[in-house]
Picture (tube, rainbow, N blue to C red):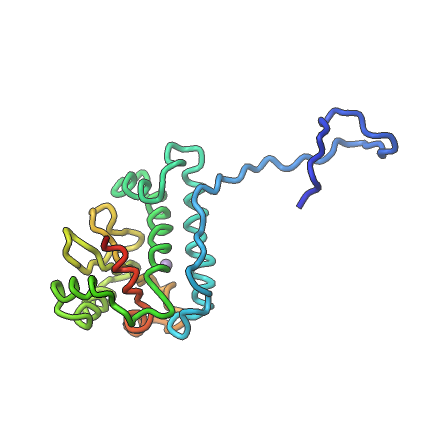
Length: 232
Ligand code: MN
């Protein structure tokens, strides 16, 4: 850090004994940083807490690089624009489906999606399904295994990068998927859980075996309590 600013003006007479300068003091480079309107939220657990399903190394890239990049890029894109003061959700709804705002949409959606995704996982996930969610699962899918099978199928059916979601659609549970950075917010479905099926979510750990990864996530990490909280 630089020294503490002094309460003197740049043109004030230097105190006696100050060495004469032949050049003015260096001024900080005028390189304005974008306002950090959006911040990378802390992970809700330690970076190795999801091992062995998701390694600390995957987290270091996925959270520390990919997610951070979406947030940083978004801040640069919206700086000094009419979008600068909007929440992520408002940005997503305002820019969805508008090719002229695709860059803002993609980075805002990916910033939102990843924060939601980290919360959709838990080191103690996969176990307790709250009764309220159990009832809704029974109505929509029959049982938890049927829901998990549908989510795994959606993950494998998604060609290329994207997301698998458990959503509430008019009070009914539904599994859906989106490509690239898209998410369910513009379709007014309420996300309950997300699984990232971009290769960066699993490639370091299981290479191309998306199915293995998704089954392990569903069995060991899925945060059904978070899903139940999101129903209200
Ligand atoms: Mn991702």
